[in-house]
Amino acid sequence: MSETPIKVGISGLGRSGWGLHVAALARVRGLFEITAVFDPDPARQQEARDQLDCRAYGSYADLLVDDEIELVVVASPSPHHADDTIAALDAGKH
Image (cartoon, rainbow, N blue to C red; front, top):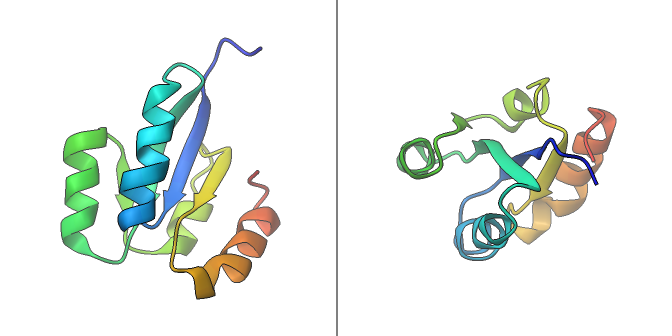
């Protein structure tokens, strides 16, 4: 196992993003580090900056070009999952 946490970007900070994915990643602290998030809502972006001490983007494309991010958690609304996942893979993210 790597001693360096995998740097994670989260796409979407709604119920699933905050309530499920952020909480799950917090339980395995040390394995994963939430490095950046994307959400179109400026209030959610600020909440992420304040609570997660991470970068927050208003554009999914900006999240994907962040070279530090290794893995993307797609927590956007369900109709966007396929396109968001393909875009993450095309950007070289797991």
